[in-house]
Amino acid sequence: MSASTSHLGQIGQIAVTVHDLERAVGFYKEVLGLPLLYQFPPKLAFFDCAGVRLMLSLPEDPQFDHPGSILYFKVDDIQATWTALREGGADLIHEPQLVARMPDHELWIASFKDSEGNTLALMSEVRG
Image 1: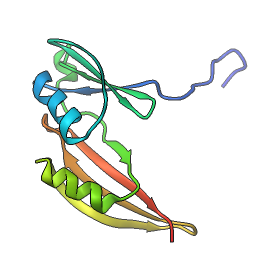
Image 2 (image 1 turned 90 degrees about the horizontal axis):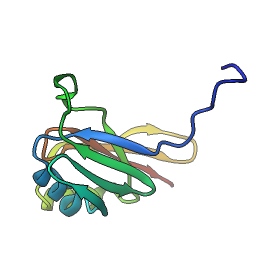
Image 3 (image 1 turned 30 degrees about the vertical axis):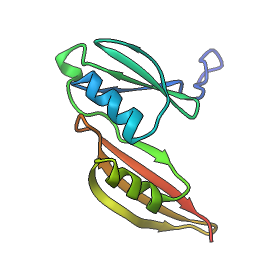
Image 4 (image 1 turned 90 degrees about the vertical axis):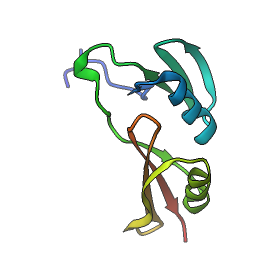
């Protein structure tokens, strides 16, 4: 990067494409327990993910009408969170599994789908 180029900072917002905003708001609010910041029906809703804003939006153009990147939510207790997702009716994909042993922790990952077919994931850094 040249000296005149700005450095990127913290992520301020992540957009997730949805097809049914009300259904998606219900999922993110009730099943995932994320705080709803504000909503602008029929196209937009915003949630707080520990300081990062999550925007749910209907696709503006056909090029954006597909599932997006996988969001990894950090959790302390992946097994308890998995159980809560199952009880909340989430579409579970891969149950919690150990993916890497680090010198100071184990990395556990699990994945599921939201109400709109987007893949989401849990990650937990388990300290010994």
